[in-house]
Length: 206
Image 1 (cartoon, rainbow, N blue to C red):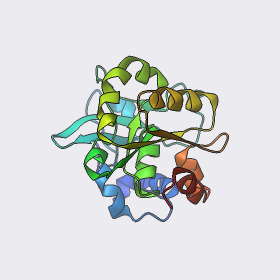
Image 2 (image 1 turned 90 degrees about the vertical axis):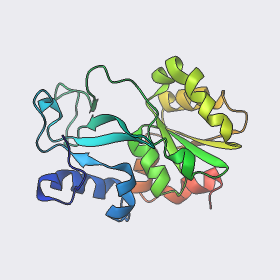
Image 3 (image 1 turned 135 degrees about the vertical axis):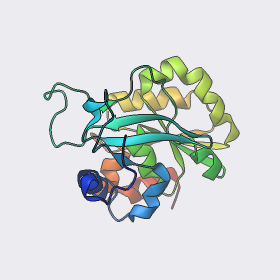
Image 4 (image 1 turned 135 degrees about the horizontal axis):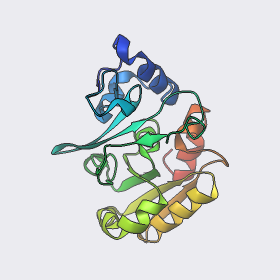
C-alpha cells in the first residue's frame, strides 16, 4: 500500500516533505518511524494516493496507519481532511516504541509529526496523542502508560487547543512539565524555524 523507501522516484514528494520537516536529520534516523508514500494504492484506498503514510509501529508489528496530505494547500478548501485512515481503525498512541527507549523521562506531543520531531530532533523519546478530544475518551486508559515514568514532558501547541490538551494530560501525572510552544507554533514548526534549542531549554534537556 505504501513505500517505506522514500528515496525512490515514486516517493520523491514524500522525501522532499520529510526533508523540510526534519531539517538536518539524515534519512536513516527516520527509518524507525517507517514513513512511507502512497504511490500505488490498493483498490478501495485511492483516497490515500499521494499521501504520507504514518504507520503505528509496536513491538508486535504495525497496528494501524494514518495518511497525511502533504500538498501545499488548505485541506479544508480542497474538500478533505489533513489526515485520513482506514474505516473502522481504532485510535492508538503513536510511537509506543518510545516507552522502551526513554529513560526516566518520556515526551508527550499532540500528533505524529511532533512526536517524531521531539524524538529525533530534541533527543527525547516521545509519544503522540491524537488530540484533546481523543484524550477525553481514552485518557483514562492511556494515562496508565505514563505511570511508569518519573517525569513526563508535555509539549503544548501554541494555541488555546494545545494548552487545553496539555492541561488535560498533565492532570493525569503528578510529575508533569508543560513546555509551551511559541504562539501559532508546534514542536515541528519551532524546530524547522531553528528554535529547537528553546524547547530543549524549557524542557531542561540541554
